[in-house]
Amino acid sequence: DAFAALSCRKAILYHNSTPPEFFRGMNTQIARSLEWGRRQAQELAGVASVSMACSRFNAAELEAMGYRGVGVLPLMLDFDRLKLEPDRRTLRRLGDGKVNVLFVGRGVPNKRLEDVLSAFAFFQKGVQPASRLILAGSHAGVERYHAMLKVQVRNLRLKDVEFAGTLRQEELNAVYRSAGVFLCMSEHEGFCIPLIESLCFGVPVLAFAAAAVPETLDGSGVLFHEKRFQDVAEMMGRLTLDKALRQAVLARQRERFERYTAQDLEGSLRAQLAPLLA
Image (cartoon, rainbow, N blue to C red):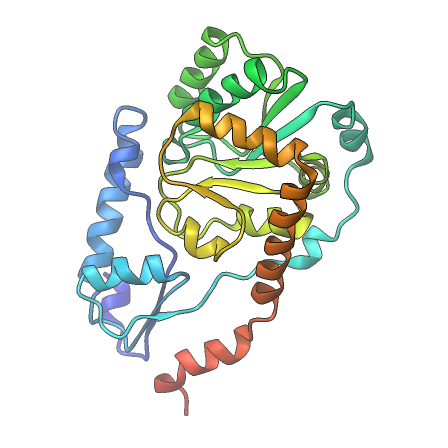
């Protein structure tokens, strides 16, 4: 409301808001806040002279709300953080010969961690028994969902599943360094920075082709369009054991990462804001 009332030059940069239906039944207050936030985003259509989004997927959402001339200004990583020395203790612990399957992101319902667990169950029981699943990310505010996931781990009789929570950057870098494959089952992402982090660390990405995920990977990684958990587990096995396939996937990921890092973010920002600049 305050933003709409301002008389100055205005620009909007939209990073997306998770659809509220993902949180219904898990946290009613978060669901209501998300619904309110999306309604407010729609009410701001036409208020700013410049409207931007951090992905074409997000731009399409704004356009559906009535925004016009939405530009795309991609998210950029703080690469200095990724260059920090990985935590040695974490490297030693995870370097025990087991295949480490990784997902990084908040432990919230739209990430579909229950599907990650289901696919990992097929992987551990039928493809690679010596395996570990690491789920790195905060579950604050969705404790009910977190409890449900723990029950699922017990019901599936899974071993070596780590709910790592929030990690220091050095620990997170070590987790990436130790990962055999990054598995993403998320059904809503406005960009998904952990995919780019995986490319940076040379971790093969296997991801459900939803929301902005295909756009962020941009022809790299391995995408699937149906959640057939047994097939996903088989592909996880190929990505960790088939050296030729793994190297081919990593080569495409390096190409994507080079395109990502070569972007002229400052030039793009200046071009987007041109209508507001003297």
